[in-house]
Amino acid sequence: MNITAHDRQELQAHGRRIEQMQRILGPDIVALFDDPKVVEIMANPDGQVFVERLGGGMVLHSQIDNHRVQSFLGLMADFLRTTVSREKPVVEGAMPLEFLRSRFAGAIPPLVEGASFSIRLPARSVYTLPQYVEAGIMSEAQHDAIVGAVSSRKNILVSGGTGSGKTTLSNAIIDVISGQSGPDQRIVIIEDTRELQCSAPNVVQFLTDDDAGIDMTRLLKLTLRYRPDRILVGEVRDKAALALLKAWNTGHPGGIATLHANNPQAALLRLDQLCQEAGVPSQVHLIQEAVDLVVQIARDKTHPAGRRITAMLDVKTMEEVKCYA
Image (tube, rainbow, N blue to C red; front, top):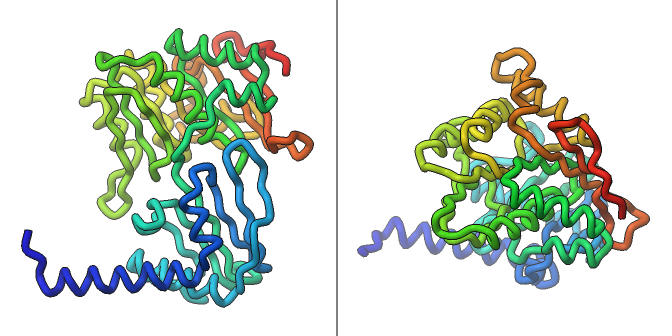
């Protein structure tokens, strides 16, 4: 393949940008991207850097000068071909490949007191369901109920607040699916950013593309042409909820999706509200047909792991699954 002078200049510019990014973050923070257990890196407006690892809570890691954070946001904006300024104080998007295409969100004053960011790293190792039991995050009975739901091809909604560990729990459940799936079972995954991990032999992963106008709803419709057996979705946050429920309810059981909510009942209400964003009336009956189990995970400061499974709801009976930790 011939590399043009323009391509060479672009590569050189990209290399310089990466070097600047790494220098600004410093070796201590850059090293976190090589740690497979790190899932989140957060720099607060006061310069304190917090890190969260698989199976553990959030801990103070280091300190970073606010000017360095602001410079890093400028470089991220440049990489994303946008700008960051007082009039446009937010930078969001996927980081360069050298930073694992991690999900980046940052802001500068006046939106915040000082420049800050939150980096969500893609999963590189799976925290398994047995490890959840070992850590006391879930009970043996909860473990068995989830494994049984996977084996029975139930559609599972993982619900929780921000930073509660929904994606990590989803990956643990997907690990069970992978162990039960052969080449004859086709799994399709749809996400905004790549966070779900699946080691099954027959997997297709789709990512939305805002620039190309390809959203989750469009991908869900495309997915049905890929002959899926199970449909796994990252966070459901808009009218795509309706397309997901229809897909789950038309011969594609055994899926997983995550949703922001404080309890299982609130998760179902939120799902209905998202469906109505598609311009349809309440979809309570469709939700009860399509969703089988809601697993609620919550942050818990009193727990050594920082979180625990607080409830499981059987949507068909609307009764709580009695699983005690």
